[in-house]
Image: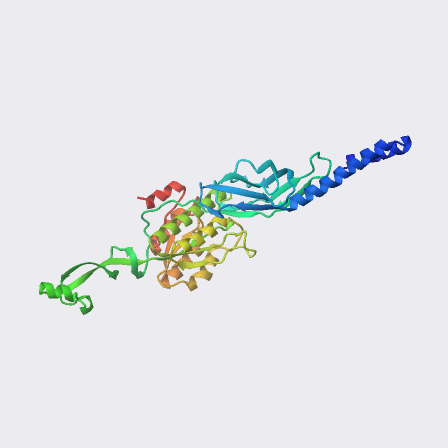
Length: 395
């Protein structure tokens, strides 16, 4: 009950006592009845409202996300007025709040709809939703009820890639390869006459019987590409003037490469030193290389939430994680910090049977010297200064 109403009733009571006016007491009783009944009414109806927020928890960048609010009055008492206020992230909608005022009859159901747009990758809180209600005359205090928030993950941008030259030391797989030494016995492309030195395991006995000459199978060259992406989001690795754009570009590159590798039916994993808001320890656990779209969605979940922060150097992350990788795994290291410690770590990995690819994003330190070192060690280096530089992998 507001202070103004209390003061008004006290004034009326004093008037009634001084003037001995019964009709003033009647007015006081009437106002008190309206206040008490109105407060009880709004409290009961507010509790009886069933609220549901329906939205898909995941969306791709640029996607329109419909959101539905379903409200049902489960009471026989009508809701005189109901104000709905929902907080929305400004990154997904121009307006930061949703406000509506409606009326709900007895057992009535109302559905409100609005849309969000995935304009920026991230992990967003939708809500909380707050309901306000009161009596018809606005005399009683406004009642409120809060509904918990929902969460929406917007995946990072994925640039479609058609051709990425990644080295591999694993000879059995699905990717075509130029070197005939890497042949896949499951992919027969033809036959030829037997020559001295051919293995008897390659002999095609049916073709031999039909032609009368000894025939051997020809296999298509292929490789298996098991890849681990190491994404450096340590803030100290980036120039503070371009840190935001460069780290976002690095995430786009990581998501695009993971999507291309999965589309080629190969295994991909992810390790990063960035900050995950859902993990108290900070950096997420590395995702080991696996195949399939479901696994790709798991990688994209991490890339959607991850943020740059002050964390362990990328060299320490490499040293800790590569010991658990299979022989022949390709390391894609996305970092602008191309120092001597990084090359020493990758050289040791190369001696252990791993391949390495360097992908600095944004302005990189000592790029000329890094190119010379990469050429000396045999590490491919692709500098992605802006997103348009990904075109080299699209044609």
